[in-house]
Length: 173
Image (cartoon, rainbow, N blue to C red; front, side):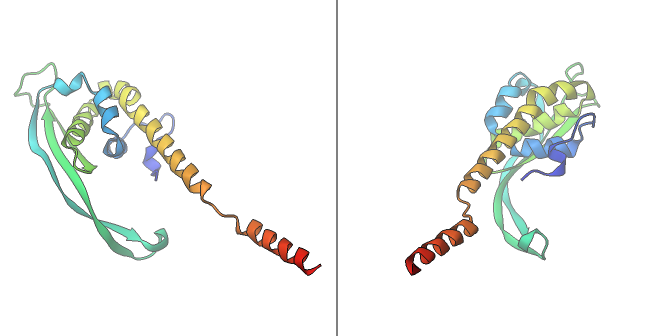
């Protein structure tokens, strides 16, 4: 399901909540291909990747009272990336954090790295084109495939009623 921040629209600046939502749902392959050069950057763990459970809530019909739906496996981490021009003790190091469904430590590490890199305004436009746009495209294609699968199971009850009504009319004659 797409949220309002998944499609920022033309001319709107990219906000951190937007890219973090995309990075959380990004497949590992897209993250690795887009960040292959930056993955070798020196980073210091603030919180190494760790896996745990998180309670998920739902709403009946999307509008009713909240209820606990169940638990999901979530992996999270936080890291500090030094600026490339500065030394290891630079005060302007950037902190990247990520939460990802599942148990992939590599995926959450790359998502946190991308979060840290996207906080640099000089790199945002390039990373948006190189990383976030392919993720948006992948998510749109996945949603379209889900909708097509769901549409293929749709039953038109009016047609069934007309067909069964037409059969009984012919039997009465």
